[in-house]
Amino acid sequence: MLAPRGDGCYVDCTLGAGGHTAALVAAGAGRVIGIDRDETALALARERLAGSPAVEFVHADYRGLAEVLRARGLERVDGIVADLGVSSMQIDEAARGFSFQQAGPLDMRMDRSRGETLAERLAGIDAEGLADVIYRYGEERQSRRVARSILAARDRGELADTAALASAVRRGVGARGWQRIDPATRTFQALRIWVNAELEGLDAFVETAAARLTAGGRLAVIAFHSLEDRVVKHTLRRLAEGGRVRLLTRRPIVAGEDEVARNPRARSARLRALENVA
Image 1 (cartoon, rainbow, N blue to C red):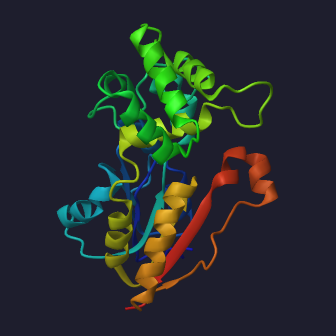
Image 2 (image 1 turned 30 degrees about the vertical axis):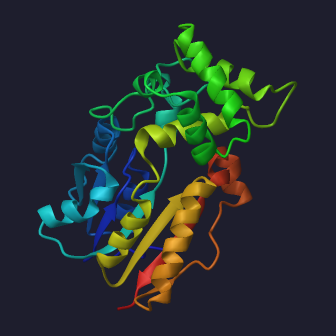
């Protein structure tokens, strides 16, 4: 989708471990600016991409794209990619507190250098406010019951880690027997989005990224849940209606069976892209 060129400059707004940037460099991109708000991810990417002079590493939030470009004297770039949400390595590291598969601290911050942890946020919220978070960002129909169960566990001093939090969620949902998706999944998604303000400014970011493309430049965005994808879809369509960009994906591109077999988490991915025609 990005069609990288040797004389082009590209931005990987969510660098992670450097997978997309490595692919861009391998495909011939002349310069890549890799942005991530997770300093641990940046360190891993530097190690993975060591020896590649084409890559610059920047510790920042992708929503600060305009400032990152301005600081480098760049008005426009030839391609931008954003892979939204939490990364696999963040999920797999218990110490980050994103997963209920392993007990970890109630943190969930993508950028551990700033902001409140999940534990700190839960300490200062009431049942109504928490239920609103769980319903809005997790689309959990039992949000009120789940919120009451979590705060009851908090008040009893039982929220020691993510395993305890997941148990409180399951009690609130009232799940019985085997289920394909763990009852805690929706609530953990909601809490992660809340802690990291993941949906705030997403539409503005898409607009900014599109405006920073050269003629023929392309933007590709990967979303992993319906809330993100809905924002991206509507923003791209609105921009296309203005005539300055054209959609490259009328429908989202999804992973094929082979890719899902290699990487089950790709099952939820939705890729959308546009090209600047102005």
